[in-house]
Length: 103
Image (tube, rainbow, N blue to C red; front, side, top):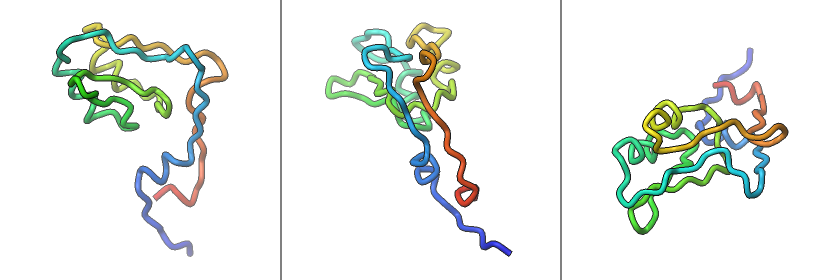
C-alpha cells in the first residue's frame, strides 16, 4: 500500500511548464489610474498569483505562469477591466501529471 504524501499547491504547480509568446501576452489589463474592486480582487483570487499591485497602486499582470483557468475573465472580462484571449497555438501552459503529487 502506498503512503499518501500531502503536497502544497505550489509543489504541484511547479511541475507545469510555460511557453511564453514574446511580445504577445494573452491577457492585458485596461489602463487605469485607480483599480476597480474586481481588479483588486484578482490580486487575491488568481491561483497562479499573476496579478500584482505596482508601486503606484495599479494592478499589473505577469502572464508568465498563467494557468489559463479563466478566473480573471469571469471576474473582470464582462466589465472590460481585462482583455483575455487564448494563447496562440504552441504557447501557454503545459500541465504535467505526476501521480505522486495527487494528494
